[in-house]
Amino acid sequence: MNGVRSDDEMSRQYLPPPATPSFEALYNQYVDKVYRQCLAMTRDSEKAQDFTHDIFIKVFNKIDGFQQRASLSTWINTIAYNYCADQIRLARRLPTTSLADELGDYVPDTGEVLLQEETLQLVNQALASLAPAEQQLLRQKYEEGLSLEELADLYHIKLSAVKMRLKRSREKIQLYCAQHRTA
Image (cartoon, rainbow, N blue to C red):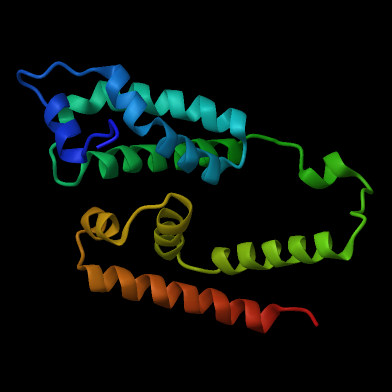
């Protein structure tokens, strides 16, 4: 297998006793996935890099508490999600400069760019109209790339329940967009 270990192999390696955690192996195995998750949540590559390093320090310090209720990948992903969400909430409390202030009177050259921006804004509004649990589930599936099985394990629900919740959330977004789309 091209050097990539399964979650079970990785978790056995890091669980005490007598295994001694190898931070480098753990980091190399999951760094790309954690970075992509951080980037999806922050939309800022520098923050995503900083958050990724902070998350791995947290993971390494908490590895003794990993209880194998879910896969190691899901456990790390949950730590990453919670860390990023906490940092984003904290940043919202601090004063920031808005994108509108930074751009001033800038107007994109093409109607296509405007259409993309309007569509993105509409989808973000639709997503914001969902309950927080629905938003989180969609983000974990589509931004963080969790599998249906990982989501079922994470939420302690059946696979069919995950599929139904995702379907209903997608339908709500489609309905919202259809009702609010400008002609």
